[in-house]
Length: 187
Image 1 (tube, helix red, strand yellow):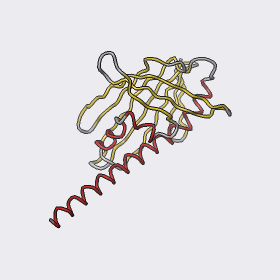
Image 2 (cartoon, helix red, strand yellow; image 1 turned 60 degrees about the vertical axis):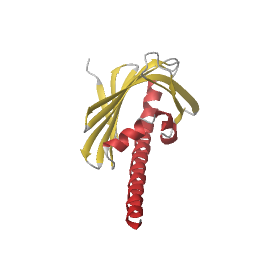
Image 3 (cartoon, one colour; image 1 turned 135 degrees about the vertical axis):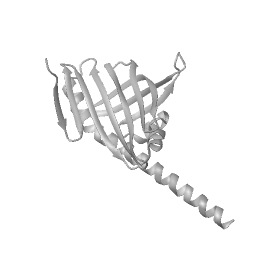
Image 4 (cartoon, one colour; image 1 turned 45 degrees about the horizontal axis):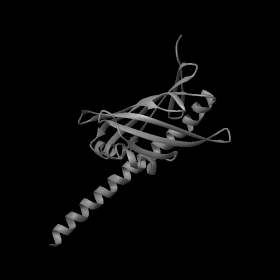
């Protein structure tokens, strides 16, 4: 049976199984890949950037890797829905122009499956394509259609917030460098 793929705005949704969704989206960021990487890999600050992320904290990983616990809060069909997941993060520095952060659920009361990847690809020295792909399957009574609808709404807002954070970080870094240059000239 062929999976159904639909594109809603900037979000692609694939339905490989009745209760599984694969969500993809991307955004162009006016910042170098290093700035995008710095924002995405600041795991404990992501809840300050991503609008629907209420908590993001590192947990002890038994093998010394990166284990992250996140809790999101969304309104679905008029109800507050809190979803939490503990994931192992795997950082891949594929090349100077391509980096990835893969994530895979290790524990969740809300999901049967939650795994995916953030991909950063350098377009120019000052621009990066940030892509997101997640495979998700809810656990319990939450209908997958409601989760699909919520993700469809949230992913563009989350990517826009990440883009803004990366671009603002780049602007701040540029301003600091310029101030340092000016200060060095006046000494």
